[in-house]
Image 1 (tube, rainbow, N blue to C red):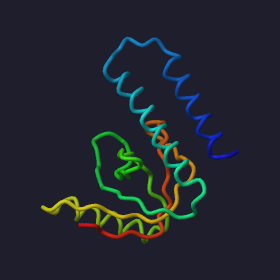
Image 2: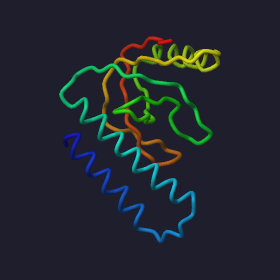
Image 3: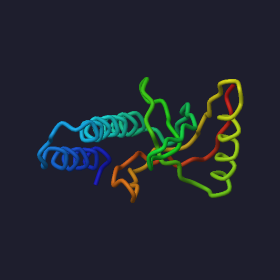
Image 4: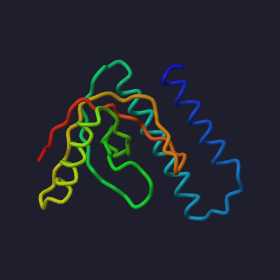
Amino acid sequence: MSNRALILVAACLLWIGASGCASSGEPSERALEEGSTTILSGIEAGVVATEEQDVVVVQARYNPCLCPAPDYEVQVRGEWIRIIVDGDQLVLAELDERAEALAAAPQLGYLRLRGQFDDTAELEETRVEYPRFVLEEFEIEQ
């Protein structure tokens, strides 16, 4: 199945799931719906932007949150979207260590990730899908 087909299937499932239950307009329900829409647009933008490219370089930041969501975000078409970073475990361990140090530093800095967007991955705790980025290498940008 092509990436576009996967995006359409995911979009339909999220839309059906969001509209299938009665909405009382609770803030958490609206937040979930808005978050799902943002995630889907980010997935689509990332996949479309990289469909014909093997490797891309993206600006990223380490931005952990209190909810069970990925700690990393990348900027795609002017918007920050959360991603799951995958790849070699040694490179990922170094990325986490350097990203945490960068986040604690007084000066603002970003990460530059080199790799590929892949299919989406599901986080078990939330059942929300995020784009997966297969990391090849990274550098710190200050």
